[in-house]
Length: 214
Image (cartoon, rainbow, N blue to C red):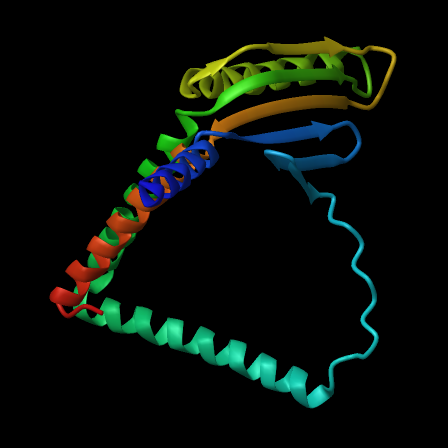
């Protein structure tokens, strides 16, 4: 009985973790700030924290060895690609790349479709050299931004707040952008999509090995 309680508790704990949301924050005024929070842990992605200077510099020999290793890996990758092209032709290589792109694309979109946007605020004050240039810039920005935001909102699961404002500023020569985004997705959807993507890539790899392409 005790063992069952322990197992049930472990399952409930992992279920709790999987169904907790991962929250992404993005802010842009003069600099892009990106961060991610899961439960009580918040990690800043951008701007990166300044790295502490290393006490000792790498020796020249170690640097040369590292560079040589990187060059070796690049050469191995290039040789593999040449071998694939030799066996399948350029068309075959493009077909393989296309299949991989489809797998990655499906996995990415399955994540995107589960995102909930809690906040999306964009404010652009558009300036120009003169009134005519400001009006032209305003038209370009509007034609690009509104459809892009519409596509994003149509593809996410739902959004709670979205405000996009573009103002022509005839008194300024510069364009200023303010943007604030908060979005979340349950960890389960990220994990399940990543697993499906990995399975798809492994199947493609096994197929290529079976055909003796790799």
